[in-house]
Image (cartoon, rainbow over all chains, first blue to last red; front, side):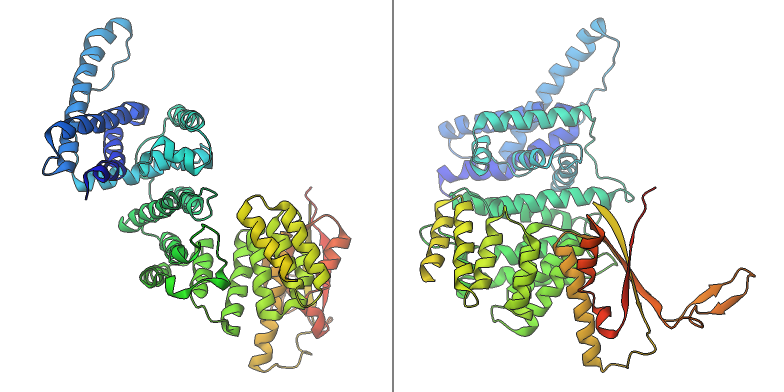
Length: 408
Length: 113
């Protein structure tokens, strides 16, 4: 790996591990200290490696440096707590001077526990995603701002408020007990999926960043699959779903960064390796009695990996959407269900159903209506596409819709 | 939003026994109908389908087989809608597949008192 790429890469992979381990060691209320120590370690690395060259084992160097920094901090802190604080207040803090454990096992455990702490239902999903990107994925503040199309100050404030809330709630860094795990896991999975969608549907033009978000979400989910306490059917279903979606990553955009719709994608660009992985995790998800929405979505995504339009394919997709909507309603699922209905039962029936949805604030509602009316009532198709055009926000979206109008 | 209970009734003995293909088609009709309600975000609870046999406990504490000695129709299932009015509930019920086999749908507003 060339020199200039090594540090950003190490930052991405090691920052989160150091923060998780230190934070678990110190307690969540000390997370800013943990972050400072980790950041400081990287700063020193930049300086030292710049002068002396890269050490033979950069990761070990970082761990060693972080450990020393943590020890110094704890030492100073213990002097302060024991010699100075007792004079000021009665509150006796516990002193943590035992060895900081940076073994692979402890790193994994700490990250997993950190995931549960961050994806705590007491903070907003937006804050959960922000903190996940920073602490679990090692994203820089600038990158997070880029992903959310906002500035560094906003992100800093958002992260600080989220941490403050978690301190107030006295969140512990630990895995929830067996009775609680399914419920807490739901929030974790929701955040992981949102993280993935943030990358998959992001408005950001930075393709590398978008892809990184997706890969990080998959990595976090894989960590859950690897741990026996969290290796549940719904976790496998979510991982399967993300593998299937990610398999089309290369086919979704052309060279100009314009979105290519599913029907028009070049199948040879689909990643067959990821499709196989998706199938593997889908099989793993088929145990136990619970059927989650991720099961439905993964099965829908599976059928989409079969490019050929068959009666069987669309009938299956329709029934899966019927079930998904009964588990959880969402406008996008309602629209997709109606599209599947048009493929399985015909356009006439789908038009009647689409009109019932009345999702007039959604651009996709009108694009769907437009598509359905083509060759049935081209005047109505045109009107629908024009309404879609007035709701479209990005240039690419507007171009895609304009092309449809021009064709009529 | 109010909740409305839909009760599906039919004379199940009078319905001719369908071929497996016809049964499959009927199942699909039900699934598509429920899916349609869910897609409009108007399904409160999918409810359950009931088997055709049953027992009734009378006031004198005797148990008899089924309530169907005096009435032919029996309850085949129920679902709960969340809609604004009886009119809206009735509009949705018009699509219920039970109507195609001579059955009917009773619509009752759920009292939240």
